[in-house]
Image (cartoon, rainbow, N blue to C red):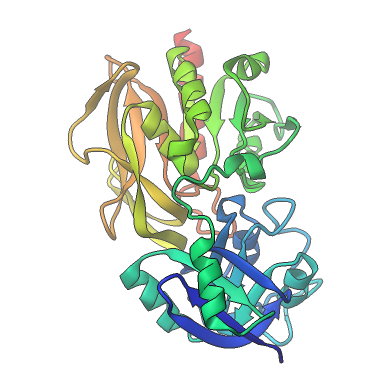
Amino acid sequence: MTEAILVLEDGRTFRGEAYGAAGETFGEAVFSTGMTGYQETLTDPSYHRQVVVMTAPHVGNTGMNGEDPESRKIWVAGYVVRDPARIPSNWRSTRSLGDELREQGVVGISGIDTRALTRHLRERGAMRVGISSASTDAEALLAKVRASAEMTGAALAGEVTTTEPYVVPAVGEKRFTVAAIDLGIKANTPRMMSERGIEVHVLPVDSTLADIQAVEPDGVFYSNGPGDPATAEQNIAVLREVLGAGLPYFGICFGNQLFGRALGFGTFKLKYGHRGINQPVMDRTTGKVEVTAHNHGFAVDAPLEGSTGTPYGEATVSHVCLNDDVVEGLELRDASGALKAFSVQYHPEAAAGPHDAAYLFDRFASLMESNAQAH
């Protein structure tokens, strides 16, 4: 086995074995609490430039297949596991996780105490990290880590978006048309909309209001994606135009942060973020608690109680994380109390699960139906 090292920007060092591709990589160290669904995590574009530490000790048992990718490639900057599976054992598996990481050039490390690493990140916060199997000189790697780019101020959606528009047709009878801005969209998102009779036009990140209106949408959707929401000024400006035009809006993850900024709220970087598929969130509009899938390092700074007046209507916090009271959803209503737009900070498409939040796509369909009836 080839020796590898992991060095955090505060100097904490772990030594293990090379896993995946050989070489060197840098990114933001984050931990994911999911015990399954690693293929969906790896191919989620919102993990771009992040080195993912898996808290589950045994990873790779189900291998990799051709059905579960959420995008065209693996996006994580690096991968950290304690005990990689030696032999995948799932009927759908076509190759091992280690082989796929090598094929796609993803540098990783195994055989380290991921529990100790996760506790360190939990206490000190997400930070820059380097992994190397090319050299085991910790001091030299530390210098490179401290010279690498930070996530704060990073504009990354343009690096993961589609270059050309494409259409995901409605399943069965077409009920609505949605313009979906691809900030790092996962494949299951338009799929879940299409199952509800929605024809989804996926548009590049730099699309204008004219581009959106050209598909004659019944609603507008902003996807998940990587980077600092404060850098997405063009998308925020377009979203304000969408709201001003009265188009129904639904946003998730990055789309929630941009919705918050469009309404006049700020965003801030969380100490270590929310990642994984087991985060508890309360829908304050119904009082129900759902277990949800997350990947976000930034959050909206909005008052949890009361409403806030905006040029587009009254904004309220609709969802909240039960672990730390972080804003997990926003609603915008007009003077009559009718819903105009909403967003959530988590992933309701939730590949590979859980499926508690699928109702949000039905809520979006109901919003478009109500808007059509009103006009």
